[in-house]
Length: 412
Ligand code: UDP
Image (cartoon, rainbow, N blue to C red):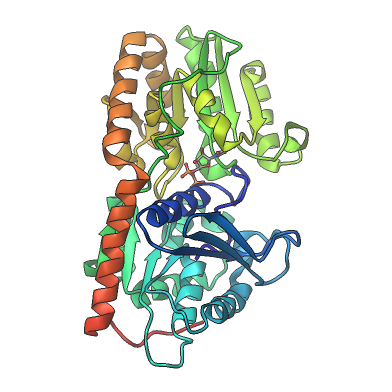
């Protein structure tokens, strides 16, 4: 269940990123292992067909839940009951062995649907949060647009789910702080599509001597402004023939400037006198991403916080070193001075120093890039993640069968 993040959506918009990739790749990997997988997502456009066959044993179902148009994810809570009803109706007498909710609101819908069955059989529910409201609030304060109800409904999803999959070790501490029993938490990271992302293949040409790449949804917490702030500092260290390529944001270059975050970043670049070095490209389709990664000397990921972060894995798989803020999942994936360089959060000076080190040393770049590639390949294939996920499903199913998981639990 992935209420706002369809596996079929274009990526890079405000609410379309890692969760979409995760759900698409994980469900495909589970289907490859022989499972029959149905992904339920909200019908967010009138043109969407009710069902799409996405591969062998893999189907995406667009459930009517609220208006058939884009609704920001933080405004979707009122439609979760309708989503739950739609799923339960779709199951009919053929119930799934397990329901997996992605993001807290999908968890609500999953728990609600799993308890709608009148036969007394309780469908096991596994939950992946992707992001936690407590962490978001801590970092975003009054700018957090999550509905107020998230404060009590998200921990409730954590308590009522039969099993939780955390994507990094840091998340387990956060779950504990939410008073959730960590005995039912498994850790399974996100993965990377190793067939698509590899160091072999052409890289696109670049307009300057060096290219630094930032990829992701253009939202303030991704810290792209910090990289722009690092550019004059990098120039002071002698690196001014540098392009910062920013991928993500509005759908087409023509529409980019209508995005307030794009305007903020461009204004900042102008104020700092580095606008000529900053390229905002907008969304890049999946298939073109590897060539873009391969054209970079370094990929910079410096979010304020990061539940997992698939972009660093994609960079590593393409053999490109990563400058990563030492937060959340990035501390697990990027190994300091082995596959990239860690910097403290929100620290443009440290970003500039790390970039200067990498731009000035091609041998170091190659060494870190090769180690990153090796790490991505050996640990982060989606097939491996699917095996870990399957183990969590089995534990949830066994727990429900044995009655060792709480039977109470509220729906919406
Ligand atoms: N992405 C993409 N094209 C874009 C922007 C982003 O394909 O124009 C992809 C990117 O390659 C990655 C995902 O969107 O696979 C972002 O995931 P990540 O976990 O890094 O961030 P999140 O969106 O979960 O915050």
